[in-house]
Image (tube, rainbow, N blue to C red; front, side, top):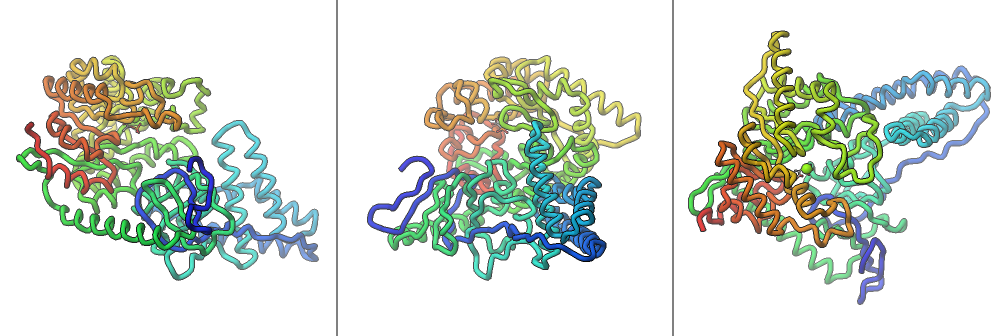
Length: 554
Ligand code: PEP
Ligand code: MG
């Protein structure tokens, strides 16, 4: 079966399988629960006392703001500041004068109930935002609906938030807004399955943090609520009404997974030393403050890649120096002196941020992205560097620059670091020792890695992009998935060359692309002399296990 369609599977009249895209591995078995948006049916009612309705609206609005404040605090703890920020934005939107004026005008001039005025204003504003060209403004359409539904829920005495019931369920939804996921009782969620959403959506980030399987792009049927189902996070499939054999097979697989996870936990606290005695560093990749808990729970030795662009992606506007400083400082403090490598802003290509207003490109993967933008937008770049340097006082922070293709770029970036340090010195602001490195993601960087090594203290190989540029295969193109091969000898030779050149000129060399977590290559990397592997937190113990069973000498 291909594509995202459903079929009866041979031998069982009810069993249906749906194919989507996995955003996190694992197996979940349980009843499906359609998460309804509580689109409250709102009736238009003529009222005698519009002033009373305005007061009802004002009270409901204040209550909604208070709720959002509590959600913000909860989200801050669970998913970190960058992801929680949206709830502060929602609070501000509720105080927007145009929004309030539209509702109160409608109540007074039409003598109607508050619910209807809020619903109509919500719809009007949402349509207006959706029609705008700017991607950032378009995205506000969902937010204005979200805040209006919250106020309506309060006016109708419904409250908001999904009631999942007593038993754990697989949550299925068209899409999940951050305000919805954050209110869910996480102990009741076995998995997230959505029709829409992307790999970088809030739901995907949450699933990774919670270590539960999640699928997107699943065209589930409307009649599936309450039905028994299986989520196969490895295959990216949802099986509804599984037959006995399938259920038994997945129950066994899930038990095996749980047993493996339990065994792996025994590796916590053990060194990453190969069977013949070679030690390698094993760090974790994160997208934000909220992932640190999982880094610590899986006993990673540090953070080898902090994808700082998530702070920008989750934000509605350029994150300020203070916002960034707080996020970097929190991560550094929580890691308690362990190394935290912050990659400077890597947007463009697949990671578009509306408020940067980047021009549409025919070939964005080879276009205006990462360090190329930063070296043009010095205001943005220096704000980030200042935040990182200030945070470096509170832990052990390193900086690495993405998408490097020339020595000149590295020198410019280093000069900006010096400028920032001089500014901080002049202001009397303290900062720590910050190691500087670059990502090796382009064949150009590999070929001049001997020269680049003289400029920095470390290399981190981004095999995701290195594969893309070495093989000339767009990593976003699903049609080329079958030939996007990170094991290609050209890619492996690039890694080997980078390690050799790095070592010859005093750089340590790590791998932070997905290939670093590929346990079929762990031994190869040890033998190549790779110094560090940085993998997603949930892969740390698996890779540790592999290191301990590998030989570093051929
Ligand atoms: C890479 O390219 O391998 C990498 C780690 O960066 P990203 O996947 O964020 O582009
Ligand atoms: Mg990359």
